Image (cartoon, rainbow, N blue to C red; front, side, top):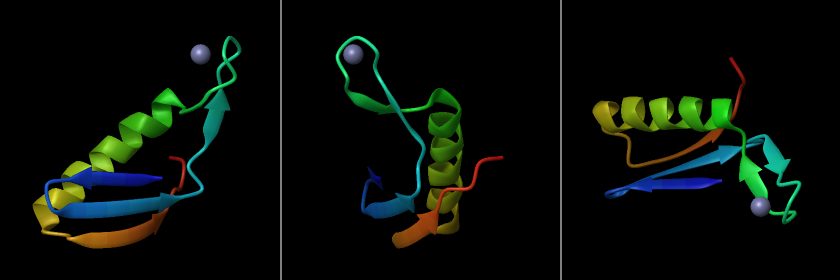
Length: 58
Ligand SMILES: [Zn+2]
C-alpha cells in the first residue's frame, strides 16, 4: 500500500487487509491504519522522501 503526504511517498508491504462482508471490498484494518498514520508522521518529521517498509504489527 502506498501513502503519500506532500512530496513524501511511503510504501508499506504486507499490510493486513480485511474484506467487507457487505460489498466484498478490501480495506485496511483499523489498528493497522493507526499504526501506518503514526509511521507517516514519524517519517515526515525525519524528512523521509521515499521509503519502502515492511508492515510489522505491534
Ligand atoms: Zn462494504
